[in-house]
Length: 447
Image: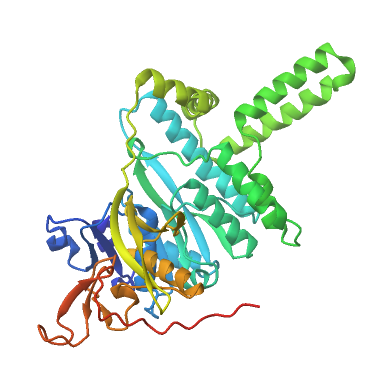
């Protein structure tokens, strides 16, 4: 990918490349090809996923006023020399664009051939047809460009999974952003490295019900996109036609047989027209015709009952990373006296949350990227009830140490001690001492 970017015919002075070194100590940043790449280093943390990586980069780069748009690319793809020129041309008319991913490979098995044919059909006809009709498509977090104004107004994309991609697409449609699929913005990926982005029906239904209360709006594109979430797939359509034709032949009043045959012929004619527009050849059509079978097996593979049986019979090992907890004894004060409590820091999949325990009462924060933010939520929650957590982070003498780490758990104590000079005492967020002086909290009165 770095070689592809270096070979772009676009003005290199207008491209800034940023990369995250995720617990990486193999001197990747010293590679000759990486000389123009700006690195952010993360150490002593859990593995950073796509969601966290996007959040870190957008947060750090948001202060740079010269950035007009963010281009998000999966690293396992290839781009042509005119890629950024195509993106720049497309962004002159739209605020958000999503591009096409074309597959290639040799010595493919039948499953990979079906994947390649279906991806070609989606990109060359389905997505392109919706774009020509002025309709929204699902954003592809592996190949998209988002303007700075959209990031400011709508928010940073949350590319954690396919459902989050759908939710962000629905938000763009709701806000009536100028968003479209552009077939000229292309990336290429090897078949065996690419996973077809087909959201499960349950995910689409979830997004549909989350947005159904907002469809009373003059924004017809938004309404169409939300109802497209529950549109039937090819397997369901063929089964529905088979059932209707069967019942219309058996029961006279259940439907007009000739009308069903006519609509089925029109559907077949439209499908044939779509194949012509997708530049399909005879062999490609034959392979694509096997997709309903592939789709059916895909549904059965992810069917809850089958997954349960597979776990039981095959005794599958849960690969989810275990939670790491760190328990700390802390004190809480109301200004008159102090009571002992428990503060538990929970780390999972590179994210952190905090749990505060006082006797039988518990409070658990939301999941945060930084430990600093998780503890800050505890501090603010206690402040609403007139209590102060007696740790360094809540002390007026504490200064955070911005050492490049994500968690910001280190800092310095600025209190004057005989044993050390002021500002030279290294501490961590949850340390405490007798010289604790609470920060002045400004309360937000509601109502």
